[in-house]
Length: 146
Image (cartoon, rainbow, N blue to C red):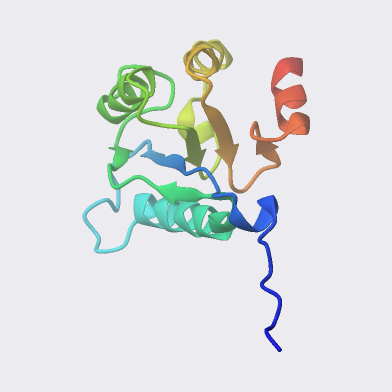
């Protein structure tokens, strides 16, 4: 007697969409940046671990490094931040992942400008050490209350 073949259901055959995650790191002083493992490395490692924990959702870390070492978060004039924003506008990024919100900016006004760029490109934002994740409805609500 022949065994019946299982017909796969839609849930088991649907492929998870890839979510391209850009990790942004920043350290305001140059102190310790020349060490083999520094604050930027620690931030990146934590962010990459978070993205890895979301692998089942299709999250992958982009190979581009967006690291601003020795630059204040009080200015938008940061090379890696400008590259990140350009890549977002070019449609190369789906989610921006940071260690803490203040790594992205220390200015509420600048944060609003950055979020406008994210929104225009439908890019989500995640802080791995704070409950801030705009990939969820609660995270988007939190952002809208700021």
